[in-house]
Image 1 (cartoon, rainbow, N blue to C red):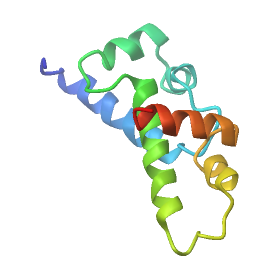
Image 2 (cartoon, rainbow, N blue to C red; image 1 turned 30 degrees about the vertical axis):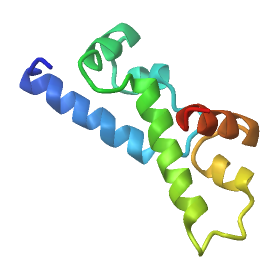
Image 3 (cartoon, rainbow, N blue to C red; image 1 turned 135 degrees about the horizontal axis):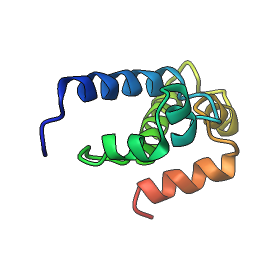
Length: 106
């Protein structure tokens, strides 16, 4: 993995923080992130080129991790799956279920 210039590293960290802060927003997409950070979508993808996950995969994995934590929580055991899925930006329980199965290898 190549070492990013300092400014690119700072931008990448700012984008990771933005993603974490906005995971529950269903409109969180690479295009929205690029727009909010005054960069082209191509530049955003280039910034993530050497990262372990693409930006879309990072968003999906982060949402699934948060949803998994909520589903395992005793405090939230009475919440419907669709409510937890919506809390983390999944537009429907079906999309959440599909993403969960794909991430789980099935």
